[in-house]
Amino acid sequence: MKKFIVTFYLPDVLDLSFWKIIPEHRRYINKLMDDDVILTYGVTSERSKGWVVFSAATEEEVTEYIENFPIHDMITYEIEELFIFDSMIGVPRLVMN
Image (cartoon, rainbow, N blue to C red; front, side, top):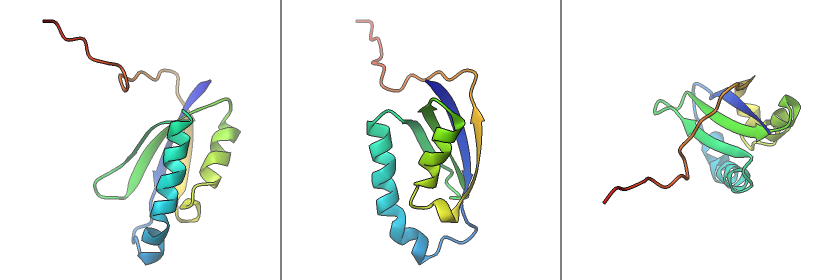
């Protein structure tokens, strides 16, 4: 599987309609993480943009996942295929006694 990073941009004003769909959005994100489709997900502290790393066969597949985001109508995004993606997430640390 290829790795893709998605940079998404949130609206300038996060109104009540945005916050109402966040629980549904988080459930969808968590499901994709459980399925190893999303490897990382983060949002800036200013809540202006975020990044998602996907594991997918094609950019079109990533687009399909994003179009199913409950917040899809409220964001803009860019998709880039990664050449290298290294992560220590989930790897136990070696402790020398």
